Image (spheres, rainbow, N blue to C red):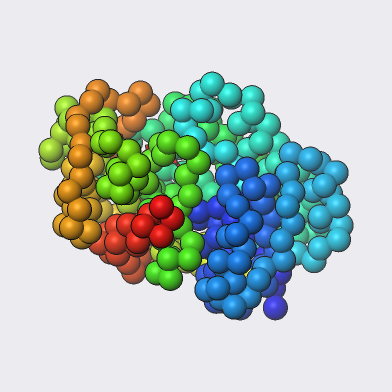
Length: 336
Ligand code: UD1
């Protein structure tokens, strides 16, 4: 049985990935500093899979703790989620973002080299493309200078991994996520935003349940079908499964390059208004919303061409937007 270290394994995408790893027969070691998650997630993972993963509460900025972890744990591969991810906050706290997102990445790669661990999966983002020249976005699309320190940590993170792969014969895959949404079918795990949600779906569900007065839709003067911005919303369980596909490719030595990167999205672009309408239809809730000005840093449209990931990783999205919105709503009701 392969031992997989999952950093940030109690977070939104991390927890869903832990469950899928367990279902695929991997043994999981979770590291999380609980800065944006709670330890209850561990029990909720166990409710789904029947297996409680090994857990270390650990801050990856602490180099000696990272060294200690690797010295005492047998690890065959790493899926690295742990990172700060609030775009707006990163503008005000850039150095904290660089210290956390870049510092911890470097420490982990150093320990991989030291302990001869070869397989690494990195959480990247479609944000590396900025406003793409061509839609849908393929992996041939040029990356753009990042619009935020957060985005820059993803770009620089990828570059650091490329250098480490070349110098130290590591194998790595970056998954460039589009917009992950939804919750596990069991409704035991989901997204738990701290404070006021920045992302669309948690803001919608919190508005529908009465925690927020109304949703602000950021701009209706974009050059899109209805003027609101377009994104590619992917069910978090599908996204989690893409990690298993990527890891399995490395474990089975099926990768053709030592560094590969894939867009992970559904391939369908939907506007904010389409999301609102679908949410209202699926949940039979009326949503209060108002149109406000554009949010700084938002792109007009981003959706994936997922040809590469479907062919190379033999992965494809299985769940619908309605599944995702329904589960997000059930999760909100359970947690309010
Ligand atoms: C952003 C980041 C992405 C990051 C993700 C993680 C960019 C370009 N994208 O995605 O890299 O991985 O957050 O959190 O930096 N919207 C509203 N009202 C709201 C919230 C959102 O209208 O209250 C709209 C946004 O303008 C956007 C869409 O909904 O058009 C999706 O927004 P969001 O969920 O925040 O994701 P992104 O900005 O696409």
